[in-house]
Image 1 (spheres, one colour):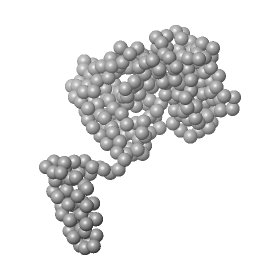
Image 2 (spheres, one colour):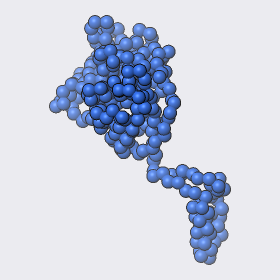
Image 3 (cartoon, rainbow, N blue to C red):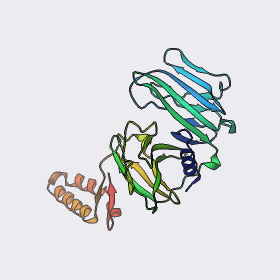
Length: 288
């Protein structure tokens, strides 16, 4: 198992507070915080855990604007402080920026929504792409994932993650008692049954463009860990498979239609010859 997954599993098993996202330290780190519902946002606060207490970073208010603490002034910015997007970006990140961050959004009437993000050093962030299973869906659709454990002993924890190049987001965490802990970005649109001891199935509803990524199931037992990955890609139209025979039949029908046009034969023939179907002969293709 790679370092990023191992780190998250250890933190969860040891009882440390739930971390929604783990981000790799790069020169310009972005901490994503997008409120997932439609309640009225009253105020947003960004804080960092500093040993024993939380230190203020910035406050965003729809009427009074953005206040950034002196320590971070000139080091961070908010690229798109829209109604829901309160993501924080560093102008230039350093090792001092490693640690736990809290994005806390006060809303009406839903109350307080919080996301916990951890920045870790680049050498501790490693993502394995073994056992990658391709899947396809459209934006707005639902995607179901099933992960058979295959570890031969009792399962202590099952964790589902969304993996991108620079971060890992928790989808849901199931423990041995059946308790569910959802990542802040997925709580409102993920279905899961944590009681099954043979496999884990989740359904992510209302897929968005940002959801197209790799998803990983990590099942942790007493002596073994099982990992399975899926890559979800988008499609802009219905996908279908056409065989060599379908292409041949299509060409014959086009030729017959052209011959029946009489005065437009020359134009129709030229249009048909402009479509090169030779690459489709002898093998299947997926076309849109």
